[in-house]
Figure 1 (cartoon, rainbow, N blue to C red):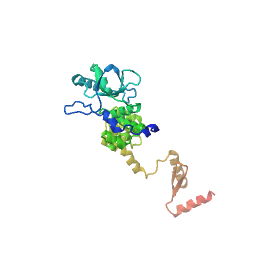
Figure 2: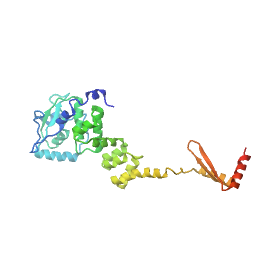
Figure 3: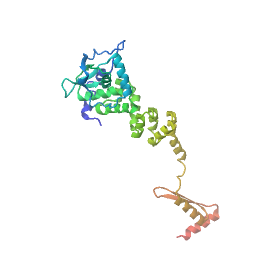
Length: 298
Protein backbone atom coordinates (compact mmCIF):
# COMPACT_ATOMS: atom_id res chain seq x y z
CA UNK A 1 0.00 0.00 0.00
CA UNK A 2 1.32 3.45 -0.83
CA UNK A 3 2.54 5.55 2.06
CA UNK A 4 0.01 8.26 2.90
CA UNK A 5 2.74 10.90 2.84
CA UNK A 6 3.70 9.96 -0.69
CA UNK A 7 0.09 9.63 -1.79
CA UNK A 8 -0.61 13.15 -0.55
CA UNK A 9 2.55 14.45 -2.21
CA UNK A 10 1.38 12.97 -5.48
CA UNK A 11 3.75 13.90 -8.27
CA UNK A 12 5.92 16.21 -6.15
CA UNK A 13 7.51 18.67 -8.54
CA UNK A 14 5.53 16.98 -11.26
CA UNK A 15 6.49 13.90 -13.17
CA UNK A 16 7.14 15.96 -16.30
CA UNK A 17 9.58 18.16 -14.39
CA UNK A 18 11.49 15.17 -13.08
CA UNK A 19 11.49 13.61 -16.53
CA UNK A 20 13.02 16.76 -17.99
CA UNK A 21 16.07 16.24 -15.78
CA UNK A 22 16.77 12.67 -16.83
CA UNK A 23 15.64 12.63 -20.48
CA UNK A 24 18.54 13.35 -22.86
CA UNK A 25 18.17 16.10 -25.46
CA UNK A 26 20.44 16.16 -28.51
CA UNK A 27 21.12 18.63 -31.31
CA UNK A 28 21.70 17.82 -34.96
CA UNK A 29 25.34 16.95 -34.29
CA UNK A 30 24.35 14.45 -31.61
CA UNK A 31 25.82 16.43 -28.72
CA UNK A 32 23.83 16.74 -25.52
CA UNK A 33 22.17 20.06 -24.75
CA UNK A 34 22.32 20.91 -21.09
CA UNK A 35 21.96 24.68 -21.04
CA UNK A 36 18.25 24.50 -20.36
CA UNK A 37 18.85 22.22 -17.37
CA UNK A 38 21.42 24.37 -15.64
CA UNK A 39 25.16 25.06 -15.72
CA UNK A 40 27.51 22.14 -16.36
CA UNK A 41 30.31 21.65 -13.85
CA UNK A 42 33.38 19.43 -14.14
CA UNK A 43 33.80 17.29 -11.02
CA UNK A 44 36.69 14.92 -10.18
CA UNK A 45 35.48 11.36 -10.66
CA UNK A 46 36.59 10.39 -7.14
CA UNK A 47 34.18 13.00 -5.71
CA UNK A 48 31.16 11.26 -7.23
CA UNK A 49 29.27 8.55 -5.32
CA UNK A 50 26.45 6.25 -6.44
CA UNK A 51 23.00 6.51 -4.94
CA UNK A 52 22.77 3.80 -2.22
CA UNK A 53 19.04 3.43 -2.95
CA UNK A 54 19.61 2.86 -6.66
CA UNK A 55 17.11 0.12 -7.57
CA UNK A 56 19.32 -1.15 -10.40
CA UNK A 57 22.04 -3.34 -8.88
CA UNK A 58 23.45 -5.17 -11.89
CA UNK A 59 25.33 -3.53 -14.73
CA UNK A 60 26.29 -5.87 -17.56
CA UNK A 61 30.09 -5.97 -18.00
CA UNK A 62 29.87 -6.21 -21.79
CA UNK A 63 27.57 -3.19 -22.05
CA UNK A 64 29.80 -1.22 -19.67
CA UNK A 65 32.86 -2.04 -21.77
CA UNK A 66 31.07 -0.93 -24.94
CA UNK A 67 30.09 2.34 -23.28
CA UNK A 68 33.64 2.80 -21.96
CA UNK A 69 34.98 2.41 -25.51
CA UNK A 70 32.53 5.04 -26.74
CA UNK A 71 33.54 7.39 -23.91
CA UNK A 72 37.24 6.97 -24.76
CA UNK A 73 36.47 8.04 -28.31
CA UNK A 74 33.82 10.73 -27.84
CA UNK A 75 33.82 11.59 -24.14
CA UNK A 76 30.70 12.05 -21.97
CA UNK A 77 28.03 13.57 -24.23
CA UNK A 78 25.30 13.84 -21.59
CA UNK A 79 26.19 15.31 -18.17
CA UNK A 80 25.33 13.36 -15.05
CA UNK A 81 22.60 14.71 -12.77
CA UNK A 82 23.87 14.95 -9.18
CA UNK A 83 23.10 16.57 -5.86
CA UNK A 84 25.37 17.58 -3.00
CA UNK A 85 26.25 14.53 -0.95
CA UNK A 86 24.15 14.50 2.24
CA UNK A 87 27.12 13.37 4.39
CA UNK A 88 30.41 14.09 2.57
CA UNK A 89 31.81 17.56 1.93
CA UNK A 90 32.95 18.53 -1.57
CA UNK A 91 31.25 15.38 -2.85
CA UNK A 92 28.19 14.63 -4.93
CA UNK A 93 25.64 11.83 -5.08
CA UNK A 94 24.64 10.58 -8.53
CA UNK A 95 20.96 10.93 -9.30
CA UNK A 96 21.02 9.94 -12.97
CA UNK A 97 23.99 8.53 -14.87
CA UNK A 98 25.55 5.87 -12.63
CA UNK A 99 26.17 3.63 -15.65
CA UNK A 100 28.11 6.44 -17.37
CA UNK A 101 30.09 6.98 -14.15
CA UNK A 102 31.05 3.29 -13.98
CA UNK A 103 32.02 3.22 -17.66
CA UNK A 104 34.04 6.43 -17.23
CA UNK A 105 36.10 4.72 -14.56
CA UNK A 106 36.90 1.94 -17.04
CA UNK A 107 37.81 4.61 -19.58
CA UNK A 108 40.10 6.18 -16.92
CA UNK A 109 38.55 9.64 -17.08
CA UNK A 110 39.57 12.02 -14.31
CA UNK A 111 36.65 14.46 -14.47
CA UNK A 112 33.00 14.18 -15.46
CA UNK A 113 30.50 16.87 -16.51
CA UNK A 114 27.63 17.18 -14.06
CA UNK A 115 24.58 19.31 -13.42
CA UNK A 116 23.92 19.92 -9.74
CA UNK A 117 20.30 19.77 -8.65
CA UNK A 118 18.57 20.17 -5.31
CA UNK A 119 16.45 17.03 -4.83
CA UNK A 120 14.89 15.43 -1.77
CA UNK A 121 15.56 11.77 -0.91
CA UNK A 122 12.14 10.79 -2.27
CA UNK A 123 12.74 12.61 -5.55
CA UNK A 124 16.17 10.98 -5.91
CA UNK A 125 14.62 7.53 -5.63
CA UNK A 126 11.77 8.50 -7.94
CA UNK A 127 14.17 9.72 -10.62
CA UNK A 128 16.31 6.59 -10.28
CA UNK A 129 13.29 4.40 -10.94
CA UNK A 130 12.13 6.58 -13.85
CA UNK A 131 15.59 6.44 -15.41
CA UNK A 132 15.70 2.67 -15.05
CA UNK A 133 12.32 1.91 -16.65
CA UNK A 134 13.47 3.85 -19.71
CA UNK A 135 16.49 1.62 -20.24
CA UNK A 136 16.44 -0.55 -23.35
CA UNK A 137 18.20 -3.48 -21.67
CA UNK A 138 15.69 -3.98 -18.85
CA UNK A 139 13.98 -7.35 -18.76
CA UNK A 140 10.16 -7.28 -18.55
CA UNK A 141 10.14 -8.20 -14.84
CA UNK A 142 12.45 -5.29 -13.93
CA UNK A 143 10.38 -2.88 -16.00
CA UNK A 144 7.11 -4.08 -14.46
CA UNK A 145 8.55 -3.84 -10.94
CA UNK A 146 9.63 -0.27 -11.68
CA UNK A 147 6.13 0.72 -12.74
CA UNK A 148 4.65 -0.92 -9.65
CA UNK A 149 7.08 0.93 -7.40
CA UNK A 150 6.27 4.26 -9.03
CA UNK A 151 2.56 3.64 -8.53
CA UNK A 152 2.65 2.23 -5.00
CA UNK A 153 5.31 4.50 -3.50
CA UNK A 154 4.69 7.77 -5.32
CA UNK A 155 1.02 7.61 -6.22
CA UNK A 156 1.40 7.69 -10.01
CA UNK A 157 -1.34 6.24 -12.19
CA UNK A 158 -0.92 4.09 -15.29
CA UNK A 159 -2.28 6.96 -17.38
CA UNK A 160 0.26 9.48 -16.02
CA UNK A 161 3.15 7.04 -16.44
CA UNK A 162 2.10 6.21 -19.98
CA UNK A 163 1.94 9.89 -20.89
CA UNK A 164 5.25 10.85 -19.28
CA UNK A 165 7.22 7.81 -20.46
CA UNK A 166 5.75 7.76 -23.98
CA UNK A 167 4.35 4.27 -23.42
CA UNK A 168 0.87 2.99 -24.10
CA UNK A 169 -1.32 2.31 -21.08
CA UNK A 170 -1.87 -1.25 -22.31
CA UNK A 171 1.90 -1.80 -22.41
CA UNK A 172 2.22 -0.83 -18.75
CA UNK A 173 -0.89 -2.77 -17.71
CA UNK A 174 0.21 -5.94 -19.54
CA UNK A 175 3.68 -5.82 -18.01
CA UNK A 176 2.33 -5.35 -14.50
CA UNK A 177 0.05 -8.38 -14.96
CA UNK A 178 3.19 -10.49 -15.33
CA UNK A 179 3.96 -9.90 -11.65
CA UNK A 180 1.00 -12.20 -10.81
CA UNK A 181 3.04 -15.19 -11.99
CA UNK A 182 4.94 -17.44 -9.54
CA UNK A 183 8.53 -16.43 -8.80
CA UNK A 184 9.91 -19.46 -10.62
CA UNK A 185 8.22 -18.39 -13.86
CA UNK A 186 9.46 -14.81 -13.37
CA UNK A 187 12.99 -16.18 -12.99
CA UNK A 188 12.69 -17.86 -16.40
CA UNK A 189 11.54 -14.52 -17.83
CA UNK A 190 14.43 -12.65 -16.16
CA UNK A 191 16.90 -15.16 -17.61
CA UNK A 192 15.42 -14.83 -21.09
CA UNK A 193 14.42 -18.51 -21.25
CA UNK A 194 10.85 -17.45 -21.99
CA UNK A 195 9.58 -14.20 -23.50
CA UNK A 196 6.98 -11.76 -22.25
CA UNK A 197 4.59 -13.29 -24.80
CA UNK A 198 5.06 -16.74 -23.27
CA UNK A 199 4.54 -15.29 -19.79
CA UNK A 200 1.32 -13.48 -20.75
CA UNK A 201 -0.07 -16.74 -22.10
CA UNK A 202 0.76 -18.50 -18.82
CA UNK A 203 -1.06 -15.98 -16.60
CA UNK A 204 -4.41 -17.75 -17.04
CA UNK A 205 -2.99 -21.27 -16.67
CA UNK A 206 -4.03 -23.38 -13.67
CA UNK A 207 -0.42 -24.45 -13.08
CA UNK A 208 1.82 -21.86 -14.78
CA UNK A 209 5.01 -23.24 -13.20
CA UNK A 210 4.53 -26.72 -14.67
CA UNK A 211 3.56 -25.37 -18.08
CA UNK A 212 6.49 -22.94 -18.10
CA UNK A 213 8.87 -25.84 -17.51
CA UNK A 214 7.28 -27.72 -20.41
CA UNK A 215 7.55 -24.66 -22.66
CA UNK A 216 11.28 -24.43 -21.94
CA UNK A 217 11.84 -28.17 -22.30
CA UNK A 218 10.03 -28.39 -25.64
CA UNK A 219 11.14 -24.99 -26.94
CA UNK A 220 7.55 -23.97 -27.70
CA UNK A 221 6.62 -20.77 -29.51
CA UNK A 222 4.19 -18.26 -28.02
CA UNK A 223 1.38 -19.57 -30.23
CA UNK A 224 2.12 -23.14 -29.17
CA UNK A 225 2.17 -22.03 -25.54
CA UNK A 226 -1.27 -20.44 -25.93
CA UNK A 227 -2.60 -23.73 -27.32
CA UNK A 228 -0.97 -25.62 -24.44
CA UNK A 229 -2.71 -23.38 -21.88
CA UNK A 230 -6.09 -23.80 -23.60
CA UNK A 231 -5.82 -27.59 -23.96
CA UNK A 232 -6.68 -28.53 -20.32
CA UNK A 233 -9.66 -26.17 -20.39
CA UNK A 234 -11.03 -27.78 -23.56
CA UNK A 235 -10.51 -31.23 -22.08
CA UNK A 236 -12.37 -30.17 -18.94
CA UNK A 237 -15.33 -28.98 -21.03
CA UNK A 238 -15.46 -32.27 -22.94
CA UNK A 239 -15.34 -34.38 -19.79
CA UNK A 240 -17.54 -32.10 -17.72
CA UNK A 241 -20.71 -34.09 -18.47
CA UNK A 242 -19.10 -37.47 -17.84
CA UNK A 243 -19.39 -39.28 -14.55
CA UNK A 244 -16.24 -39.12 -12.43
CA UNK A 245 -14.16 -42.28 -12.29
CA UNK A 246 -15.51 -44.63 -9.59
CA UNK A 247 -13.27 -46.05 -6.91
CA UNK A 248 -12.64 -49.80 -6.61
CA UNK A 249 -14.89 -50.24 -3.55
CA UNK A 250 -17.89 -48.74 -5.34
CA UNK A 251 -17.37 -50.94 -8.40
CA UNK A 252 -17.10 -54.08 -6.23
CA UNK A 253 -20.30 -53.17 -4.37
CA UNK A 254 -22.14 -52.70 -7.68
CA UNK A 255 -20.96 -56.12 -8.86
CA UNK A 256 -21.99 -57.87 -5.60
CA UNK A 257 -25.48 -56.35 -5.56
CA UNK A 258 -25.99 -57.07 -9.25
CA UNK A 259 -25.01 -60.71 -8.70
CA UNK A 260 -27.27 -61.10 -5.62
CA UNK A 261 -30.46 -59.71 -7.15
CA UNK A 262 -29.56 -60.60 -10.74
CA UNK A 263 -30.26 -57.09 -11.99
CA UNK A 264 -28.02 -54.26 -13.09
CA UNK A 265 -27.15 -52.00 -10.13
CA UNK A 266 -25.48 -48.61 -10.53
CA UNK A 267 -24.22 -46.56 -7.58
CA UNK A 268 -23.43 -42.85 -7.90
CA UNK A 269 -21.61 -41.82 -4.72
CA UNK A 270 -20.77 -38.14 -4.15
CA UNK A 271 -17.88 -36.70 -2.19
CA UNK A 272 -20.20 -35.28 0.48
CA UNK A 273 -21.49 -38.78 1.30
CA UNK A 274 -24.80 -38.49 -0.55
CA UNK A 275 -25.73 -40.31 -3.75
CA UNK A 276 -28.16 -42.64 -5.42
CA UNK A 277 -28.47 -46.32 -6.34
CA UNK A 278 -30.26 -47.28 -9.57
CA UNK A 279 -31.62 -50.79 -10.18
CA UNK A 280 -32.59 -51.63 -13.77
CA UNK A 281 -35.17 -54.30 -14.54
CA UNK A 282 -35.91 -55.74 -17.97
CA UNK A 283 -39.57 -56.69 -17.61
CA UNK A 284 -42.54 -56.79 -15.24
CA UNK A 285 -41.47 -60.16 -13.80
CA UNK A 286 -38.15 -58.63 -12.64
CA UNK A 287 -40.03 -55.67 -11.19
CA UNK A 288 -42.33 -58.05 -9.20
CA UNK A 289 -39.23 -59.93 -8.01
CA UNK A 290 -37.58 -56.69 -6.89
CA UNK A 291 -40.71 -55.61 -5.02
CA UNK A 292 -40.82 -58.95 -3.19
CA UNK A 293 -37.13 -58.61 -2.20
CA UNK A 294 -37.72 -55.11 -0.83
CA UNK A 295 -40.86 -56.25 1.04
CA UNK A 296 -39.09 -59.14 2.79
CA UNK A 297 -36.34 -56.87 4.12
CA UNK A 298 -38.69 -54.95 6.41
